[in-house]
Length: 352
Image (cartoon, rainbow, N blue to C red; front, top):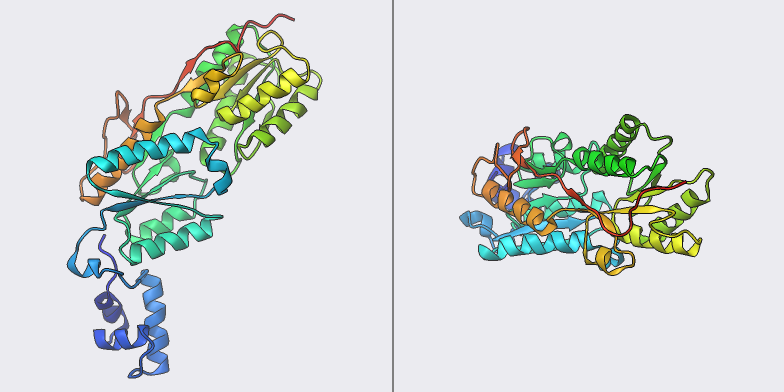
């Protein structure tokens, strides 16, 4: 897992370290052909100049990276990431380790940032979030040899350890609860369809609805914002027959959906039941307070940071237990206890 050095580039190119230095610094003394070959090899290995020459001494950066591929303006109103970051920070502070946090517009920029951070010795590793199916970041991080932990399902984590929870288990609880209340038309306002956890929830939701004998279970995909959540709710409630219960993938959209229902003259919970994913204070201050899927998000972030620090130290993390969880399988990491349903005032028995 050591960072590539000038010696590595020289060995691959079959030239001296001095020649590599000349080639990479644009100094005379090497042919144009050698210069081009050395630069190509340096790029392939992910070599970058180390700002404090830390890699030459083998010293650690005492920092880990977290990159969020989301519009920066959304993060201030997204409780999940704020709680996740607070948990990461708590764990790192105990070991005098810093968090390098950056927001990027796309995965290409995120990958370029990992290459630069690792090559320049800015971080000792990174936490990957918002895992996608066939995520392009995973093989790049594997090739770089950068220690990393995925906060997501191990099926998409490759050889990287994953810290994750069972999305299907809590969906069975939510759908079973709504069915027991007499609801037969349950819809879901979901997040980004490309995200792996969204696909897992989509599939689990369809299975759970079928098993409970629910008729029709439309899923509307959004970008997690209140605006998109409100728009999806209007479309669902304008359909005939309309759903009598809606499950939202975050609390921002659930609060927006509550406002839309009231705007359309539907009483919550008498005419419409609402369930929010990832409980937060926001779910509790609205009226009625929202029934929510709750989990300890700061503890989730702290655990991801803890596993990453162990990987950085070269320790094995296979089969680790997490607050009553069990072995997550795969190359390492662990499965957290599933989230649980917390009923509040936004759900009630359905009466036709």
